[in-house]
Figure 1: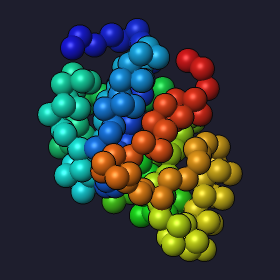
Figure 2: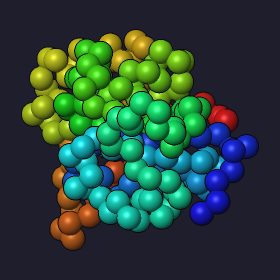
Figure 3: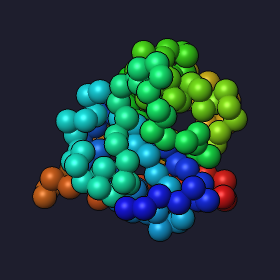
Figure 4: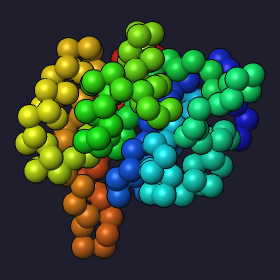
Length: 176
């Protein structure tokens, strides 16, 4: 895949949830909407989707670990960020300003740079009821982060996740 520096660049941050196996749908939708795409995954998320397919679709390596000093930057600065699926752990750590993974560091930095951020949560109802999670959503919402409807992560009878609305993430972003 050739990369086009004239197109806006979208970071897709992927967290460890079963629905992450469908992240290719979001990549395709973003590319159809004229975005260049780079994927940043939490370390555990790498086991939840086809990494070779994602790299082939984006034409870029998946980022999951910090680069060494002096290593080239594999992605340009983002014009927008989508977090999908966003887990309980990532939402809470991000709201608290914890930056112990590349994914969290990118999210904390994107806010500081004023980059628009859209989030599709994937959190069970039991975890969503936790007061820390509710406080995290409120804090992030106050920071201008836009949230899609929560998804509890249930698979259908065939093991798919048809209710996870990947394209909704792009609708939450301002036009580019």
